[in-house]
Image (cartoon, rainbow, N blue to C red; front, side, top):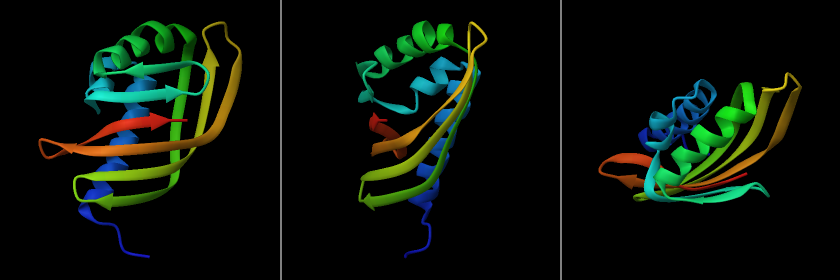
Length: 127
């Protein structure tokens, strides 16, 4: 297996920022991690198209749903091909709903990334 490159480390930091911003409700910073025309598919919940719709989903749905959340992404398999890349991550989220009910979610993130003006952005996210 090849050692981590600058690109793979930047993508790891992108995924880490996703969880940190989401868990803190920093919706403008969270949305800025996505390409302007990115797509997000959250299982059966909703398909989101574009950075603005992604930000609005955070502000109006996620913010109201959770009193607390802690997103983690582990053991990534990242493949870089020029200015595009893919990543497969294990996902584990601990949370407390707004009504006080605790829980957890596990699964995978299946990401596609694109370099935009020199920075890696999410192009497609599904879990």
